[in-house]
Image (cartoon, rainbow, N blue to C red; front, side):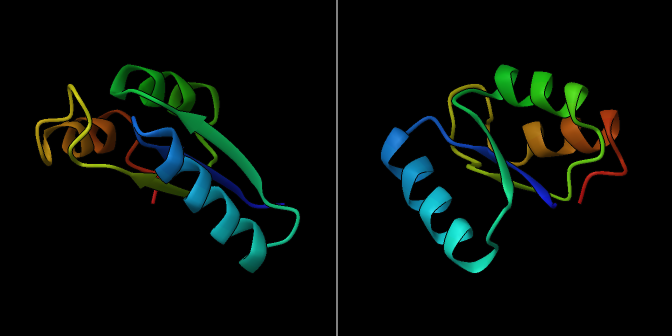
Length: 78
């Protein structure tokens, strides 16, 4: 079963992404984060995740900086 990490500070966006992904990939395991710090913790707990969907404009994200930092900590994450 694939595992996806969804990171967005807006609950409605997370809900929309969750619904879209579940329709396309039945049985997917979805893990959600509402902050950059929560995303880093999820990535640490689930380094074998298959995909990360991340809002680049979350508080603390500052554009691509959070993505670059996440990739430096977990280069295996797609």
